[in-house]
Length: 229
Image (cartoon, rainbow, N blue to C red; front, side, top):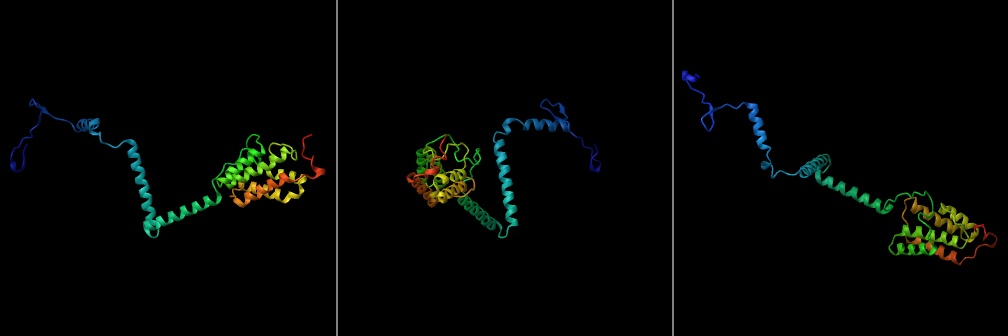
């Protein structure tokens, strides 16, 4: 080959170990390099698929925070303040409304489970009250009232009866407690279906009603209105 200034130079071919010229094309050389680098010995310290996924996730989360901080007045400090306020609001709503409860499959039925005695419901109400679970205490005490009236044959046992229906039927036999029965049924509905939270005074009113009903004699002309035929 003629080089600069007319000097003749020769391109020396690549020699193998036995001095045989070797000419490796570009594409096969790249493929051979890729095969070599794909061997496990070169990837022993590579992160696992889970680690790579977590790294991508945290990078994404970090990008979101950076973008939010850039768009929030006060930067990162302002973003933290907003998050704290939102968490406080969520906590306040949770405390006010209580834990969300699944609507019973039986609709507005007063009793969700199998037959239990009035004393069983009273015992359950007392346990809930001792633990400060006023919603459950109100529910169990109202069930105790209705079950007690059924056991005294002042109400006929009827599956699917609602608290309002029980209060209206019981008021015909015990008219002196009409207002208290309606208030107790309303408290039961509020905590069971209305998403409201009961307190100790609400429970004590139903507890006092239960005790009072136990000592009340039914009206003579309607005492058998709810008895089974």
